[in-house]
Length: 497
Ligand SMILES: [Zn+2]
Image 1 (cartoon, helix red, strand yellow):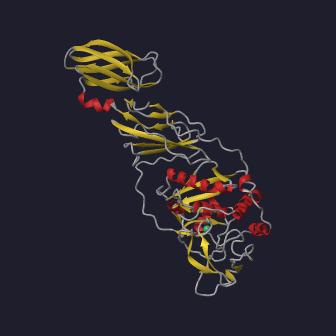
Image 2 (cartoon, helix red, strand yellow):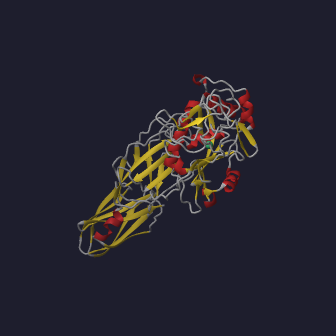
Image 3 (cartoon, helix red, strand yellow):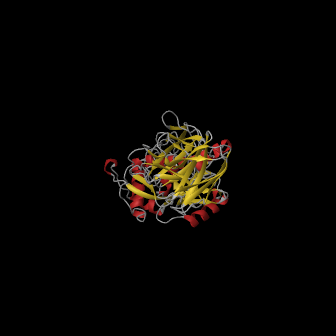
């Protein structure tokens, strides 16, 4: 009966909060790589006009990797915050990513913390063609993330996907053909004290070192003339002018500092924010020329109308008196395709006791999922495949009461039982019990929410009593029988089949 998911495969996390200490990861593990396509493109780059660009929608497959036992998977809330950041950063390029198909879950410790070979194997096994495949893992080969050119996919360390981190945007830049701004220096350390060479060489590739005067910018360094020279292949923080503290010297001996605003440099997340026109032109051309299989559905998404929560069941502040499985339900929000639902004992949600990801405007709460006789707070966060930049709704509460178990210790009749139970539709149900005294009792049949559907008064005698009650006309479902007798209430659940 669970109407849970399929689009966003099921993610139910009870007792969130314990997170393993995460290793400090290096920045980008992308190997020095420049595609033949980019070399060709840069010989005749297109000029862009930022105000005239149509948005390109790029399908993305998210693979959430956990350990063998399922532990360690990035939480959906954090992942959506990171996805929001990715698309926010790419607005400047008029490129927007959307989640195509189901979010994929992979439980494999060898992939969760992987080396280069395991990463390639993972991507080869799970890549979905014609989508931007992103693997969210614990430790992607010791880096915050990397683009694997041979598999055309990226791996991302979950600890580097904070809501204002640029790791994902940086690796997406690699995916869309961009090299580092310090391209050529990946394996050569810059030494200010030595004269700067005209070329840098690694493996069997030799690259011209970019000069400040721009004379060789189209073929030196990253090949983009609007990214200034940069030789820094280590993580660095920027100064108040968003430049490197390290002064560098080009082959002519001209001093300069690296531009920290460039996402494809190794500056800290607090500095980075920008793709240049040249980089944006290349990324868009890469999609249009090299990735036509990705550019399929270009229909703009319907926006999410609001984050307003209008509870249907239980109504705001209402109770579920006879706690059995029930559907927590709210009014559907136009444009929303996915909802996160959080349930907490605290209105502050400083911790949650249940989290659901659903594609309908309801979630099935099982009979044993929540403890009875408590107040719960709930909220939703609506999403669609394009838009993760939504907040949470207002908070509502409901009470769960289990009258049957909470009052069983105070029963005022003895040995109460119903049979048959379950009872067939329209069949009579027999109530048997013993009473210590003769009195008048009220027999009621209640709905799940405690509403009396029918009621009758009868005399009861000392000793054994036997009554019958009609179920004629009752829809199939769960009900409660209540006997008010001898100054107290006695409850039993009744199932009509
Ligand atoms: Zn990189």
